[in-house]
Amino acid sequence: MRFTDDRYAAEREQFDLAIRLIGHEARTHIISSLTGFSQDRIRKLYTTYFRHAGRNGVRRQRGKSPSSVGFFVRNARIQAEASTVTFLFGLFRIVRIDERLDATPVRHPSPLLFGQLMCSAYEAYLSIHQRPQISFERAWNLYKALTSRREVLLADCRQCGLLYVQDALALDGAECPPCRLDRRSPHP
Figure 1: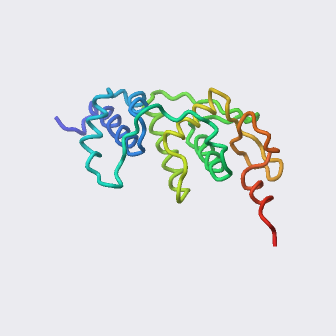
Figure 2: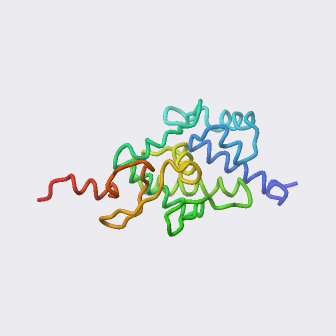
Figure 3: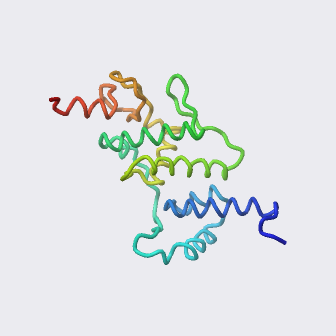
């Protein structure tokens, strides 16, 4: 019996995804919902692979996941990063953005595939920004807010046409973060 046999492939994918998610400091309930692993098994994985990682290691996130969408529009930098994450959700086929700029979830054959795509999109975001402000948990919250709660939405900038994440109740003049920053900065 070899670990590489086909019958172990599915469990290996679950294990690999769980390790990726723990590395992104996802909470146990998210890891469990995407991998099918029990909460006890996830805690044991953390203890085995991450507990002694040192000072810059992975921390276990406890308590409730962040749920405030106000975070994504608190300032232009975070709003621009939230827009990047949303674009990556579309690129990795996690959401479908239609001509009315509605973001709808893309159905996947398994939570495992969805989790792998979510990790890939988040890892692409991390590679784009030098000092990212959005954690995996916040990206998860953004996905939920875009696809179900309608507390945030996508809007077209009236200045440059860029798509950006906007608070559904905002009165921002339909300007994206870069245009707002450009308007505020003194021009030579």
